Image 1 (cartoon, rainbow, N blue to C red):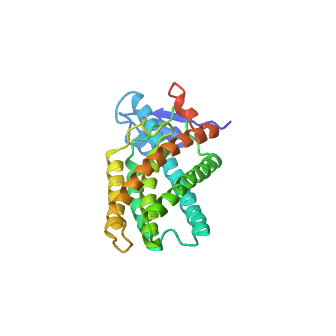
Image 2 (spheres, one colour):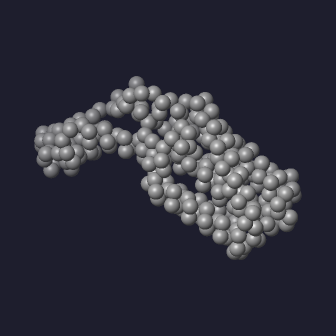
Image 3 (tube, rainbow, N blue to C red):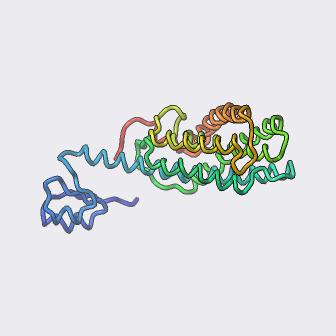
Length: 265
C-alpha cells in the first residue's frame, strides 16, 4: 500500500525534509526558507488550519467530480434523445442554433459551479474513473428515459415542427439546470444548500432560454402555456432523477464516504 509522507517544520534545517515530503507544511513562525519549499504554509497556530485545508480540497474534488459527471450525463441524454426522436418522428428534434444556445446557457451554470457549497466527504477521496464513468452513463440513460416522456406532451400542445423543436430546446434548458442540483449532491437534492452564484446563474440561464423561446428570437416561438408545462414536468423529472441517482450511487459505492460518521484525514 502506498504511503504518503507529511512533514512539519519551521527552521532552515527542516527545509530539505519539507521539500522532499509529499506534503510539506511550514508553521506560522517558520523561516522564509522553510516557507519557500513547503507545499502548505499555515497562517496561524494549531491543526485546525490543516483540517480546513483538507475539507476545502475535498470540496474542490466534489466540484470536479460533479462537473465530470454532469458533462457525461448531458452528452448521453442529448445525443441519444436526438437519435431516438429522429428515428421515431423522422424529424430533427432540435435545431443546430438551438444546440449552440443550449451550450451557452449551460456554460453560464458550469462556470458558477466553481463557487458551489459542495459537501466534503468524510474519508479521503481518490479518482475512480471506471466508477464515475459507469455511474454517469447509467444516469445519462435515466435522464434519457425521463426526457422521452416529454415527447408526447410536446406533440399534444405543439402542432408545428418548429414549435416542437423550441419546446424540446427549452425542455433541455430547464431539465439540465435542475439536474445539476441533483448531481451536485451525493444525497437528496435538498440536503445541502447551493451557493448564491450557482442559483443566480441557473435562473439567468433559464431566463435566457425562456426569452428566446417565448419571443421566438431566431427560433420558432412557443406559448406561455408550453413554458409552464415544461416547468411543471421538469420538477417531476428532477425528483424522479434524484431518487434514481441515489440507487445508482448506492450500487457504485459513491455514497458511503458521506454517510458514515467521523471525519478522517
